[in-house]
Image (cartoon, rainbow, N blue to C red; front, side, top):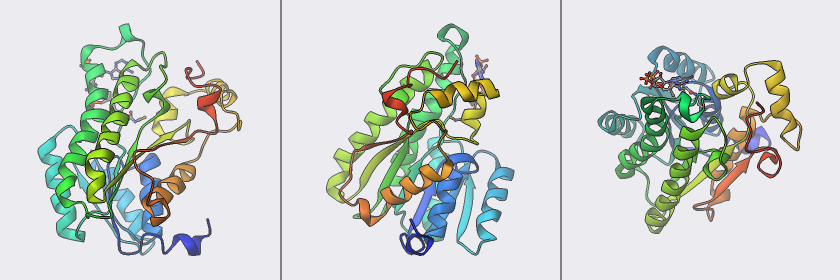
Length: 263
Ligand code: COA
């Protein structure tokens, strides 16, 4: 996609992205800002948020940030109100905050399991529920960042599999219930994406990385830009009839090597 074409796609739009102080969602936020949107970054760490926001502002784009835990409904409601007050109604909502660590079922405590389910699933609910009254209707687009774990069981990932299965169904119920008001809700399932905290946790050694790459038909890890471009498309008018869809962006891994973390 040429940068000139991209630069006009989201002109005048407002985007709120959870988990966007770093990683995939920060790259999506940067892409949205390049395309003309005002972006509200969200995360838990104020220092990381300030640094990420400064990066976008330094390019002359529009951004602000808010710190809140997605597990705290009141904090998310306040974050949405802040966004509305600053930028106006929200056109694009990205539910991207997630937690993960590899562990077998017997190696995770009840609290460890709950932490991931609460961040991923309850967090997506809290974010969308709190945003609803501030979403532009018609025209808003919601994207939940999920994973192939939603439909495929992976060992060492019971918490994420359970959480992402819920995120997928929850997002599709949004597509059904809110579609008549002109709100679209879709999912992106990234495969192994290079340079993310998730991959650093799941494939921390060169050997583990190589094992992961062998599970991907395209024989490479994905990039944050691969996901950002898909999110840009889904948020644009070019995707105006796509609702309730799971967009898999994994180099074909789901057809070959899913079910293993390369371990
Ligand atoms: N193996 C087993 N249990 C683990 C673990 C690991 N590697 N890492 C954390 N836990 C457990 C903790 O021991 C704790 O359980 P306990 O109270 O019974 O001891 C529980 O998980 C919660 O940990 P805590 O650090 O208090 O929770 P948190 O809310 O601050 O962190 C996590 C949530 C655990 C998901 C943390 O990994 C996180 O914040 N991740 C966000 C970043 C991330 O994972 N990004 C990648 C997304 S793909």
